[in-house]
Amino acid sequence: MAIDAGQYSLDPNAESWEIPSPAMTMFDFDYTDGREQLLRLYDKGTRKQWIGSDRIDWFQDVDPTNPVGMPDELNPLFGTTWWDKMNEAEKGEVRRNLEAWRFSQFMHGEQGALICTAKIVQTVPDIDSKFYAATQVIDEARHVEVYSRYLHEKVQLVYPLNNNLASLLDDVIRDSRWDMTYLGMQVLIEGLALAAFGTIRNMASEPLAKSVNAYVMQDEARHVMFGRLALRDYYPSSPPPSETSARSSAWTPATACVTGSWARRSGSASTCPTRWGPTSATASRSACSAATCSCASCRS
Ligand SMILES: [Fe+2]
Ligand SMILES: [Fe+2]
Image 1 (cartoon, rainbow, N blue to C red):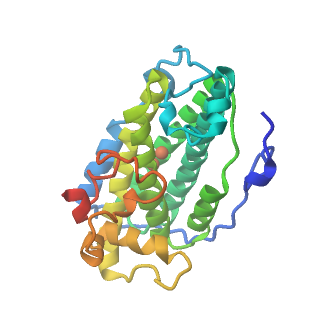
Image 2 (cartoon, protein in one colour):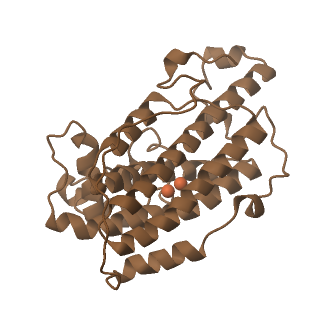
């Protein structure tokens, strides 16, 4: 299917994307100073490693007219006159393109997580955070690998990175502050991704896509916890990112969710940042990072 390059931030044929990313490299020579909860998470992250080619049954066939197997009712075109006029072959092509687009954004986002986590290893001041982030680097590489394999082998169609995700990744990677890498990637983007993965886990009927998402989700829950643990100790002694920042609409509530103060500040039970965005209407409680978020809306 022809792709209109004007819809995307990157040329569909582009093979790379460069973002200037100044960073301060930090050594920590206090090798014996580790926070117990973070070291436990590091231990868990090491033990829970899995191998994509072994753990997932890649011999399963996938219906090219309905990869992932999401209900048609969730298709944005469902219920429109365009949908009603399509024959079955045309509907199959719409489903294939929609899922190729969705899984392509997951794949590109996972590469963003891979890059951000490697940057955290370099820039975070504490050795225990460097330890855990190192386990997450291999997690994110595996996530890129499994989404790429699903797209290239089973759907056989890949879309470029879309404008909105590109803008978010650009903001996070361009910022030199180590806590902004955490806040943007570990809390905001990973939290939203968990909600999207959860929707697929709960509603998809295609076994291969379900198992890919389920294994990725197991890792992602640890990742959000890592961001929260590291920032919880940092923000009480350091002011959160400036509220005059152009990105304050996103950063401020995300910071508050980390510190557990968002629900108190807003007085609302429906404003947890991990439930923001287009996925919020369909995100289930389990898809929210409820296991890791301490705000009142997630605890209730
Ligand atoms: Fe990931
Ligand atoms: Fe992650």
